[in-house]
Image (tube, rainbow, N blue to C red; front, side):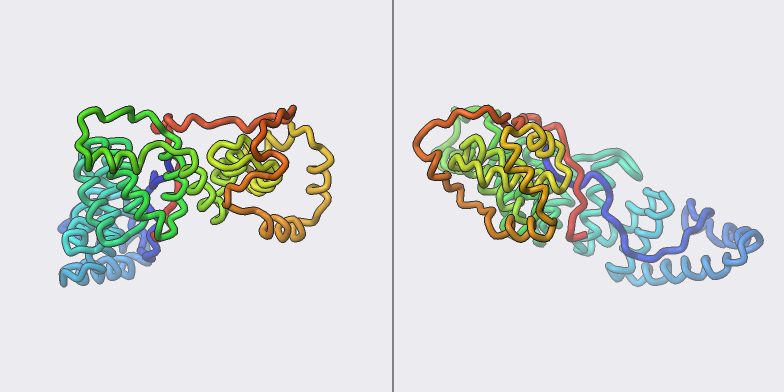
Length: 328
């Protein structure tokens, strides 16, 4: 359910593709000779490898990173760990992130969640929002560290405040979850921090809606759900429908299912007859994150035959949603 990195981010470096470049650098003169006999580009390819190797020998962080990326593209993760490790030690945040993911996923050596957390933390402290979001997930799930709700919330907030859509939707799930229980032995200061990060439907709505305004379909569904049920926001059926329609336009399965079974068919028929441009214009001018109730539903219960959006079990934190970090 949490949004995080599941795969190594795309590497933009244009690198040669050596089918023979799987061993250590000491093996390359022999490999290059045999490659040149079978591939007319062998000399050119080996020259490119040599250039990367010589650049890395200078110790310049970008050159170290590029050489690590070369090994990664060859699926030589041992080499990638070595050279990204050197760039990471030199303080390069991007290398710290790539190295952390190798440790986390067990590529190029043993899986080591604690070492992964250490390198993600170094990049996060440098202000990388993707790494900050990852640290939130790490502390929330206890991957290589002790579970810590306060630290998880703090890291999510740092990333979300910088505009990270992943962190914003993660804060929505975070504030919906009340499975942490009561900390009976917390100090007054700790209790205050825990209270700050206690489950709150209102805070969950606020963060879902922030991600929804950035175009996240799942967050749009959750925003519509909150408005429809009046949980975390005032009951507002118009806002609910508008947000659910936005999610459905992005093929969110729950939003589509809800709209297909909605009782107010005439309202949706009108939507379907609009051009996409007109629909987008009206929706962008009317959706909001105020949480205000529709006056027709304020301070009174409303019975409806329309189906309620299916609630997602926010405590199921083992389910992780793939997301590519925009910063990488």
